[in-house]
Length: 84
Image 1 (cartoon, rainbow, N blue to C red):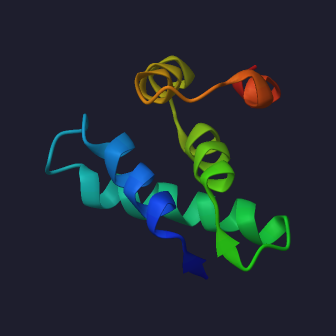
Image 2 (image 1 turned 90 degrees about the vertical axis):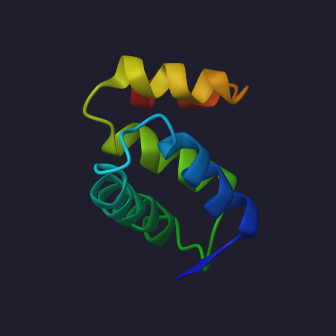
Image 3 (image 1 turned 90 degrees about the horizontal axis):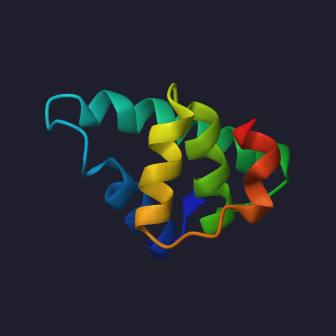
């Protein structure tokens, strides 16, 4: 699956707060979830929306996910159903 440059950059930014030794494993897990979300939507390319949705779904702690996304000025209104 092809990743847009901005989508890949967003994922890297969202992972920055994690300790360096945890990032590779977290990235692999979250990236897999993002690609699953995109595939379920029939997409050929990973978009910003797929990254946000996959990140939320993969997050074990939704409050931390919200904090990270808000820190990047991402409007969470379209994703409220995922945050419940």
